[in-house]
Image (cartoon, rainbow, N blue to C red):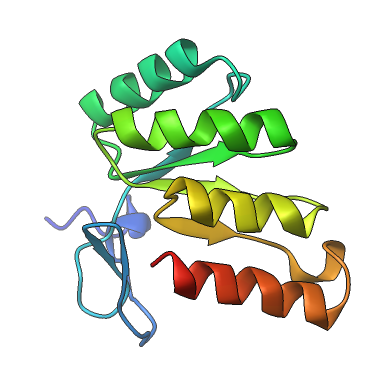
Length: 134
């Protein structure tokens, strides 16, 4: 007897998408589905954030998001990225300069909401920084 009628979420039908790389982790396309989570520590607490990232990686997370709300967090992100066992996605809200700083700090990916970081020119600056820093 099939369990599909009891657990329909086991049937995952994926929409066609373009594959990208988040650090060394392929996402989309025909790549395996990845597990992503987010820290809930203060980003400026480097040791606590790295510890939480390590625990997430040990539990099976492939990618971890870290909030970058202020300049101090941008500075801490550089060390966090260096110590992380998995690619880090910088979660940016409201200030486009945090996106630029996160790219400079080595984030594998930037998560932004273009509607809340200002003008199209600011969005272009974040995109340029992402390209410039890989």
